Image 1 (spheres, rainbow, N blue to C red):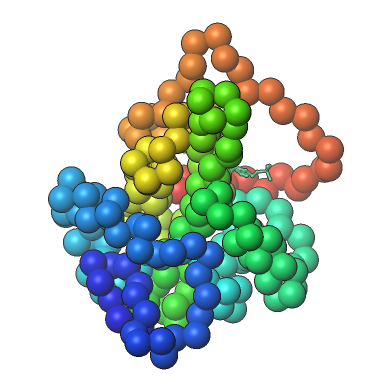
Image 2: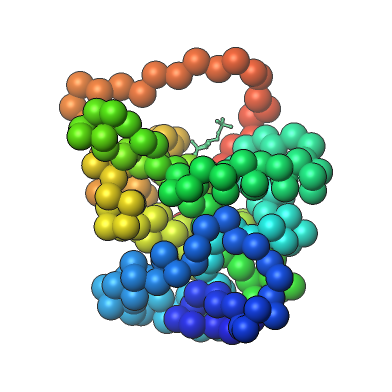
Length: 208
Ligand code: 16G
């Protein structure tokens, strides 16, 4: 495995891992981002963390446990994970699960954020983006990993996926965090929700 600008790249096929989406798709936005905020990128990627698409092997490096810091995940075996991974992969240009790997800590997954691109008939066959499941490991908060992931995915949705809009749901205390990336309440719009299953009261803390 080699490292290029903080993004993983395969070294001549000696790495058998499988990614959810093509990591080359991230290169252009990552490069642009490095120009926009070189300090953040340098700090974060100083051989400490790697940003890349979700890989099959991430199951063994704490991906699901990380998601448990966001909400309930239930019992997930490797086979369950594999099946869902394959289902997502079979929907091209739809599921972009980003992860941050802690290189110095047995490749532990310490951050994740997902962009889901929903194809529509409206808006001239438009695509709507949704940011989902943003979580940074509690031991790695305060290092702007959440900021980097959300900013990159937002830019990726606009420039690569050609989304006509992007939205997310979050708790009240995170509204200001997301506003810095351009998200805001829309006039006379509401987020309505109906729950079909009871969840525990797992609360997420600040993700910055
Ligand atoms: C937050 C997440 C959402 C996630 C939900 C899980 C972001 C921006 N929002 O709203 O993506 O699915 O929490 O909570 O990360 P739930 O299990 O109660 O639906």
